[in-house]
Image 1 (cartoon, protein in one colour):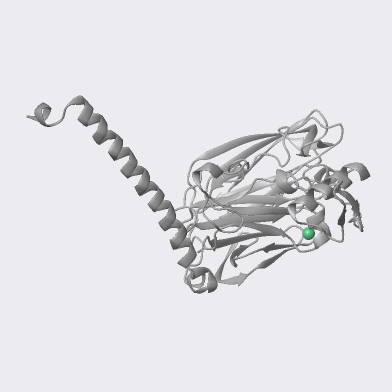
Image 2 (cartoon, rainbow, N blue to C red; image 1 turned 180 degrees about the horizontal axis):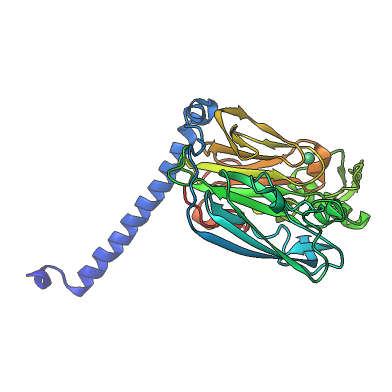
Length: 389
Ligand SMILES: [Cu+2]
């Protein structure tokens, strides 16, 4: 019988042995993971990336008969770019960027704009194919939305892709409002089965331009120095004073570049796991070019201004013109913590740099030991909610 063979004490010994065995197995798994990482050389070529399928456009977009309703309230708001650095600006729904509006091709979209600013505004649907009167450009047919009033826009979500929304038009201080934070992302998912790879992660970032006080701009650049964006700056001695050239404001007066409303280390990390295929949507609402450069791996440009590319282009530096959106993807096959930054390096010094971090790996591409923890970054707030593929 069971009890004759194994007394309580024996069971304890067996249990303890099992725990030790499992621990050894766990440790072995960790060592094997390290060994596997060390022998995986797939990152040396772009063969696998080139073999991925392209996105495809929906041939015949039909009405889904679903109505997606949103309210955007434009108002003055104080928003934070990084710890201790805030802007007295403007925002939709008290956040900059405003909420990401995400719908499916063929949905009826109904957005009510409430103007709580002290000046007229409007919302333009950047890149969408909407009826002329819904374009949000203030004009004789669509006067600006006055303070205290509201307006409901209604249109069918056109083709899938990454788009934006922002104020526009005569009678509206559109540049001033955008540069204070009044903008957001508009994402349309394809109806039916989407083309392209199956994405494990889907991130979206919108790059803005901002004007900070000299003191706040200096603080950002000191922080960026710590992140590896030195520009011409040198640390002086152990006290850490700075010398050298600071990046000055550009012709537009910008001296900071919020990415999803944050700069530098405050920008959400692009967290990935080894082996995953990851999509990143980039949008540029600032009035400057940005040349987003990823270290350690190439990306494929899979869509420009929402339009899928039949032959995706491989590159490591993606040029984003003002008003442009570009979708890229990559295979996470080179573990570590990699910089992803604007290669107009003054922009990088002014906060336009983020990181791609492989879960469970350190900056030297080695597996983390359990004692090392999982880093101190916040997990994935930039990842798109309602991800379908
Ligand atoms: Cu730039």
